Length: 282
Figure (cartoon, rainbow, N blue to C red):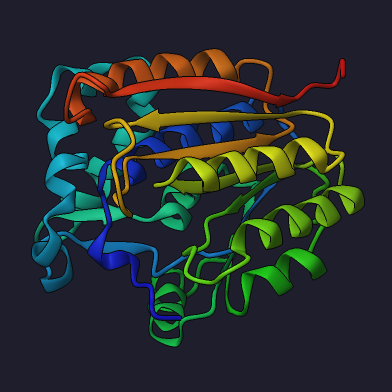
């Protein structure tokens, strides 16, 4: 309950996560049938990059601000994502950045829906205000883990679940895999995207192992390192583990992350890659 994303909005990890999220949504839009995006830890939806929290850390300077000023901003696979960023910024008094629920909402068609859950009372109130009157969105103050247990499968039967917890509590890695595996048994056709921070090799390897052992048959991880591992708790990278990834996702994620490396990497040890944690072929 103490984590507030406003301090980190638009940082390098947000850029990678949201660029990949936009591609997952784009794939769902290839079919006319409606789909639902479920955001289990949605945050407030919109962040003021000129506000006190963002100015205190300045993390966006090495993230979205750097990207928008770079040649990589013209990459075609970043077009949908950056169009939303520019639109949200243009509507704001100062620099602004869309969180994952607002990004997803701006990418939906008329027939698609978004369910966004947030437990922190202040952020939940801001989230509800962001989407007030929007009939395509349900913004609910609720524990995202409870929502994932109770609200899948959605009535649309097609869709994407984004799981982006704060990783503040012990046992979070085990909880993520157990909860997603249960949801997958209820809704095996859904796509599940699990964001995770990369700080220590042991935690990363544990998540990989648990996903391999989960019984879910098709899982890959897209990982972006802005630098190599360091002693301590430095956020050196981030990953997006995707259950039931679209067939084009591995290649698109690779192309996106390679385009972002020279912009978001901090030294020569910056790298990225795709790891197949489980495949349908076994």
